[in-house]
Length: 258
Image (cartoon, rainbow, N blue to C red; front, side, top):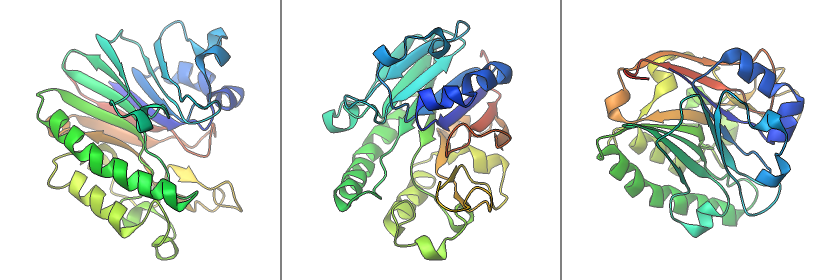
């Protein structure tokens, strides 16, 4: 089972850059998108509703902002939009598709880089999210939570770690939260279960020569529940084409029945 996560930084911009052509060639089972920056009434063209996929959008109330999506070959048994928090859900940051006992989610955690209030909001969400994750870990289902978590976990996950220790996305508190997520909380970083190499990034600033110099951050993840940790069969970051300032994160799973 091939599952892809991509912060597309505008789904209409991604379409113009060839994302949907690539999606057709890749033939993935599930694709999770973040930051679609569109309302459904702006996505009326058939290209945004591929005929061989079941398509679900969870848009932000604010136009041109945030939003997530799931595309799946198999029709889900159910779709859940949001977590139940008005301040989070109005920004269109979470959608979950359930296939039997497998749940695949697309999540877009906020960045705190724009202003201090957004970093406070980010910390608040991180704290609130832990009980949700504990409940999911204990519900007997298999969970894959794909998306832009807006945190580089370790020094290996960011090019200029020394210069970014006081910047949102690499703050000590954020990294410690990730330590707990992938430690005592029992979740796993699917990519690092398969690839331990340095310089494996999923986001590059549009400023300067970040892409050309591979001055990046790995802030996109497949976060998987403990009962899936032996199912990862391959992991890659696709960089042959650019659809966004992020790159698609592709994980292959061996999940019986799918």
